[in-house]
Image 1 (cartoon, rainbow, N blue to C red):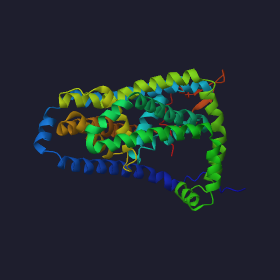
Image 2 (image 1 turned 45 degrees about the horizontal axis):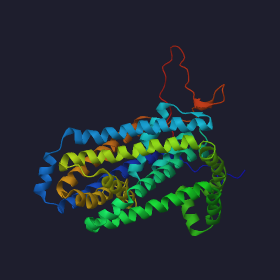
Image 3 (image 1 turned 90 degrees about the vertical axis):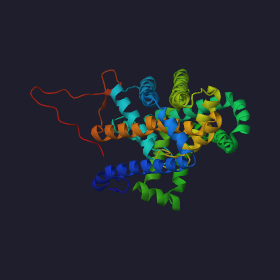
Image 4 (image 1 turned 90 degrees about the horizontal axis):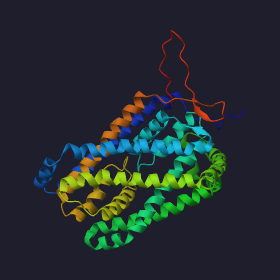
Length: 384
């Protein structure tokens, strides 16, 4: 029997996983520290010190708490969409998935690791990978639709801002182009998923294909993508053709979520600068700068996000020192503290395997083992 396409996982790879994660966390912290120190050198230290003294607990707590609210909202969105595939996801599993997904976003270059890990986790729980991929990656499409909608509404605001932003104007232009491009690419990809399989098979024998095989330690990666893409199209039809109402509701919820993300920075910015910037202009800047900074290859876009927001928002507020203080406090609450939260959850809560089984009604749900009398439950085995 040919085992060349067997799963490439090894005990050595499993042992090195924790070391790689710790290394990624260290790089994220170091990159953020170096870039933030450099930005601090460009601003008057006395003004920066004065701005930090004006910091309140509210400015720190609000961004941190808003991310927890978003975890819960994303979990409820799972409970809204997964039943369309005959899956009843538990609140605990959905919450764990969103916390760890955000954690992996924060430690991977360009924040690209969150969605793949969410797919991996839910697949290990016993859910079909093509279904999970549809749900998780459909969120990317929804996110880009929401961002494109906001950009379209406030486009005239952006044009008016560019003359006053100086060097920051190119970030808004780049952000607009990225928003449009990403939306078109994602929609074309998910509406024609067979193209992914075809592309993978054609790349398999190329230099890039061989490189992917070495990195993934899987010589048959192209065949797996081809098989996976065949089921992706059917799942896409289930979500976007047969359940359009549900997806539109999910998009509306995501729009509220986008406003919450923006509020997590808007509130400390208003507190530390002492002025409330016009929210439409701020929201447009928040979205576009965030998209541009993700293309800087630091883990979780650490440092690059602070730099891009400082360049644009300091021109918007006219107070560079207070703006930088607000941005650093915001990042401390939504990024660095949640880097710690995610690491604690990941290392202290083992990932379960194959716990979703069909019930009498045919719906997949989390089946919990009953405890036998007099026997203490052992700690579940961690997945690789």
